[in-house]
Image (cartoon, rainbow, N blue to C red; front, side):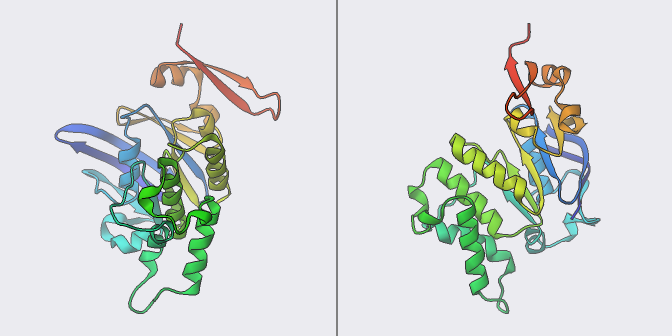
Length: 254
């Protein structure tokens, strides 16, 4: 499925958080969003997920406006993992992940063995199956983040939106989640703070002050000039002696 944002605007109390952002995300690609704090990444993801309606512009899913679609229909195609997703319910880990199957259940479509299998696989994918019976409120921040990702995977979306999914995760689980994301047979839009992680995306969009300031492949976007202008850092780009991949090392500009 193709996801398109056309001339998107969003403001709160007169303060512009997004201004005239347009982009098209192709089926099957891993599309990264980068930018400093407050640059508009989270707002853009929420608009793309259909959780907010743009003040101006529109979001299209396979040429259909999200505004004309029921939330249930959107949820059958798009899943969003937010940074600060919480639940006040007294749920077990498995019950929290089972919520990802909600868009597909109805009076005519009851819970099945297939749903059970999908939930178990999602928990396995994020290394949380052994915590399936733990209560949500007993989990650490990193464990909760992995459960939220599992719930999105249980939704089996065609497009997965992730807002800085490696926040709160230790290095081992950061690598595990990013490896999993790269292997998923779906379109992925992922907001990242770690610019070295962003280099593994197919394309990147750089945000600054609510505007899209660069769009292209990682090598086209992550230039020393762009990093200095947008992030205020000097970047030295070097080749990894192990596999030849590009690595960035950052320092204060001279």
